[in-house]
Image 1 (tube, helix red, strand yellow):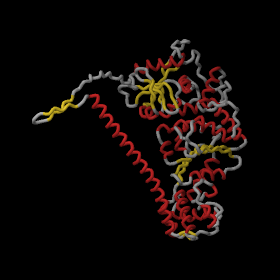
Image 2: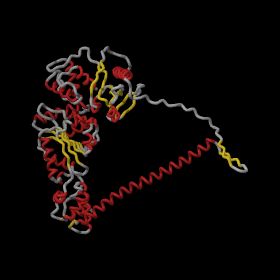
Image 3: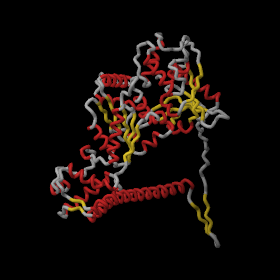
Image 4: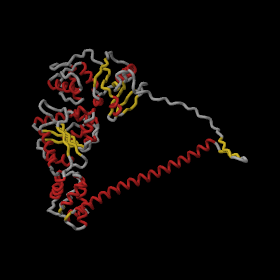
Length: 522
């Protein structure tokens, strides 16, 4: 039918398709302003840009139109599937940029190194690179943390990659949470795409019909536009739906004018379609609920029969004045063995510290045998809860609100979908991210084994510990060349690391800086 109405109205294609075709982008004043800000953020290398808007406001269409406005020297990587892991993100970005990764290179470091080299080469050619992620409200915290790390890729003068996060309003709520503080503070441009104003409705509808090859037919009346706005409230997706249905009705009536009455009929049909779908769903739920109720009744009746059989028959004795029911119990009472309750995940100072040392020794040797004599230190840091995903070795956290009577919880390992905690009996139990976030009290501690000869590393030094420092910085996203020389790039990488984690930002890799890097190194 829709193919027939395109021919009837002399369109070359359906003007109100819901696909995000950039040719159909209608630049209302707000859309034009948003597009100009996006181009400005890319050209001026602002680094991190966020565009939000409600469902159907045209975010994806605007994003694709943005790509058509980029100059030839700008490379782009587009990600439309936001349900990915941090490693999948890096892999997809390299594929989109066509960085030419070597076969078999699949570690996070390999992906970041290759991407960084590509971005440096692009910058040297006076080019630019953008990463655009649609439906960003679906990204996990771990992927958002990786995006934060990518935003660190820069030269002394400018950002090497411009990242645009496009999503629904929930994205802003995610970024405003305490554990996204580091990423949120890096956002340089924030934009919100709003619905069309009433005065823009006519221009929007006529623009789409013109792009589809229309030559003044059909014609929408003023009343039709008012009715369209009343139904859609300026939402482009809803405008497309009602106009598409209205043209179908007009075609069926062989009319070239879309009136207020036709729009009303189109709205009624759309709502009827929705009510039918909702009604079918409701009927299915009622049907399944009825089946479930019957099943429960059958189980109850069957259970009553078994209970009666186990308890023995009911004996009825008749007397001249009354009837007495006597229940004879033959079975013996079963012995109840209480189940052991799991130990608490919250421990005192002594218990948590003993378990922390036990985890350190187990992780170092695997067989409980100490293979080297090292002096061990218990180091303590104040860290924000969003940093917990970067901690790779066992650590304990002071429980929030337990300053008077210190209590701790202990994490033995972190994972993408949660973590493994250790209870007071030394048993491992899975916990989710909400457990960590809600109980986090900032003070974090772990066991650190400093080298016997552990010099303070400074700019200009060329000692064995420098290359290890550089490799660790690379693994956690601070890209420096592992030359073994404490050069300017290494100094800047250490300084950025110190700033982000609340250390004294002097660019010197002293004991506290190295102890924190040790915790983040796999």
